[in-house]
Figure 1 (cartoon, rainbow, N blue to C red):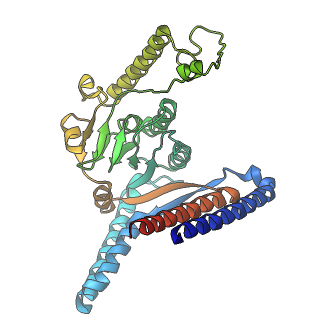
Figure 2: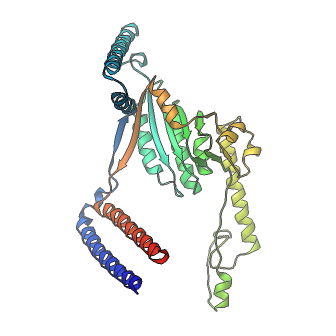
Figure 3: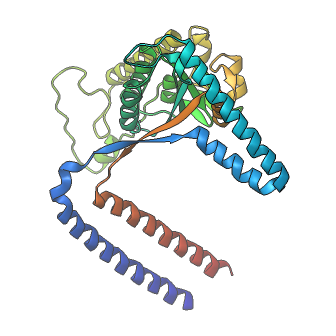
Length: 358
């Protein structure tokens, strides 16, 4: 009985909170409608990864080293910085320069780092295109781009656009490295194969060079309940398979033909970007873990993105570039409400489990 009372009380509180939050969201949404035209504005954020890594190193040294060793380390760092500055100054003097701009020899190579976390719709392409546009507007000869890519794939047109954005980098003659720590499969690999070099963690998932489509069909259920469904089209193959209508063998054959054609385009694209792979071997739709992917030449080296970036910080200036989209207040509030409700439901589930089993 006590459990039922607690159960009812909890849902009464939850219902009250939900109603209150919905009213609040509705009120704020109405107030913010006048600012709707500002939605979508954003800005570029840049982090200097060399400074970040150096800061972490200094924090650890300050704890683990004794005072004398720490003082010696500071002296060594200061001497190195002075030597680097002297070498850079010498390079500036020894290299002919134009009146209007510095030459590549007068500066360190720059590596720009982007992140792409792909979902089914490849929605991250909205930020990717802005980041690439920003980088290409300032990039200089000798600079490079690296993308930390994580995606299991998704819709063809979404990942086709994402791959096209990366091709913009290659078309400018800029070296592109793709780092895969977890997964770059299907549409994710369509993006990865564009790189001059693909690095993967030993157990990262790669490949899945195939195409799939699935949909339920409720025609027999509707027919059983005497419900008619009519679909009118103009054009023989305007609709091949449907969810509610009766599918035909001819429609299925056309749908399969479209899948095969898409798969053929996918294979051609991968072969064009990575001529070293045996496309018939790797285009079966199966996946390979990092080491096996190296064996079939889907990747070039086994290495995590962390290891790659730390190594590059020794020789280059490394900058992480992110496009931050400005979200309207109602969207931010919606995310907060979602997080709150998730927390309440998890709390209830935990309480219910303890009440039931203890």
